[in-house]
Length: 116
Ligand SMILES: [Zn+2]
Image (cartoon, rainbow, N blue to C red; front, side):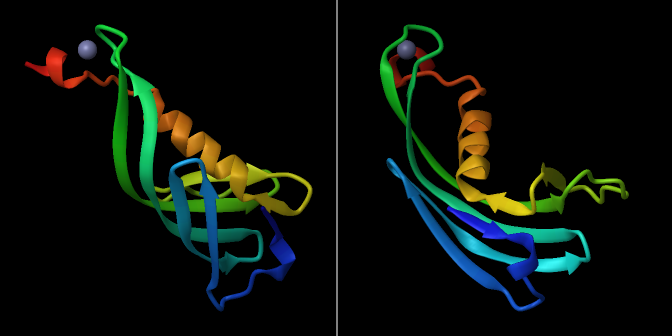
């Protein structure tokens, strides 16, 4: 799913994206001439393996996200928010979803057996 930067105004634009067992939904609205603010929730399950024994486990996630999306290279000050740069004037929501899922997966998780 893609939305062009120029189509995003100060009026919130809602979006919803489903990928496997994850729902990524929220809104985007324009913050400045080259920045768009995304406020969304990542809700669902990610299959993962236990970092100790390798057993399969499902991670329940319910994460609020607030990310700045930059139309091209971001040059300004970052006020405690993640900034994702897009080139070509288009926001790729699948890419945001995938990178957030990867960020969750990069953590360490243990199955019920290994936790105890
Ligand atoms: Zn385990």
